[in-house]
Image (cartoon, rainbow over all chains, first blue to last red; front, side, top):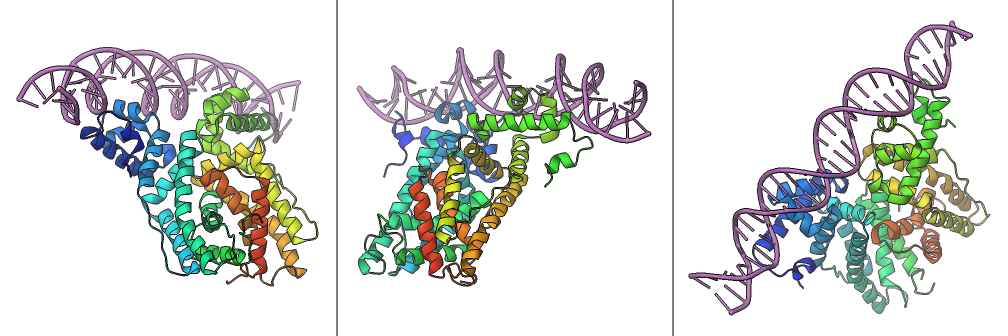
Length: 205
Length: 205
DNA sequence: CCCCTAATGGGACGTAAGTTCCGTTAAGAT
DNA sequence: ATCTTAACGGAACTTACGTCCCATTAGGGG
């Protein structure tokens, strides 16, 4: 996998350019942890990265641009899905990985920033959609295997099952802003699984 | 119900003060529709409302403060829940009302702004939590009645059922940023109901 | 190893958001 | 009706973000 869609377009991607990008993305993430997306300023990112602010404006254009690039960078780091051999275990592993990502001191704020950036920038929205659709696809395989094993009804939509697992967790995080606990993750798995076994995730119904 | 927690604290809430507030909240919502939360500026709100910007800064302090007050204003407008006599109809009515709110040209952007404001301001987060917990409570009654009628298992947690209905819709709206359709609403109801009938929403499990 | 130029960096500049000061207006009590 | 003062409004001021210009640095091809 290529390291970056943005760098790929440059004429001199090696050496200094790559170093600058690494420093800027690092600084961006640090700033997100401390001030969140709404407090992300090009100026401070440049200062923190030890880079001219002209460079940051030229290459990324806006705070949303920084987050988009950061998002692409994270998207390239593929996270392998679990395979415990039984749906319940796989889905719980999925829910827990979401939970841990949201609670991670560095990744959590970054994910929230990605969501915030997507609300005010089309490119960020597109990037976010791509980011999650890829993650969802990867985990959906586990559900498809479960269908083949006969654990779930024929025709069950794997991607939708994975979405259904995450939805309540993100809903609590972003919308009602309640704490998201492991119990929430377990409940989400149990409920989704109950619906799936009842055939509620079979494609056209 | 009092008209506003903020006005209640003022010494002269009548006449001009109330007129100013109405104009400012109106202008705030217009600006949110056009530019979203990230583009909400005190200056333009003041100009649009035909009010001194000093006044806007003094009474609301920040864009987040404007949204918080707008949120309180909306929270006071109680939305009665449906009662079709059968769970499925009530829950579908709930899902559709959420759907319509999100698609409404004025309320949709306002709700998104409330969410955005909550990500960068504690007071807004608290307000948002209160806003939704109240709406959830109101609709939870319909589920409780269904339990009494024997349509759902004893001990089913009504509030959690209502949350489960909304979660996938908001998830699509905010996180994956896919379009939210009536089919999504219907699927969400069907799946939640399947899980509820299987007892997945009974309190301790 | 040298050259060409892509890419970066510093600093000056313009603009707009946010703050402060003080005079003006009108709510509401007497 | 009159008076007190809460609340508003205009305008100057301060700061910080974003832009522009040009000098400097270092890839990477020859």
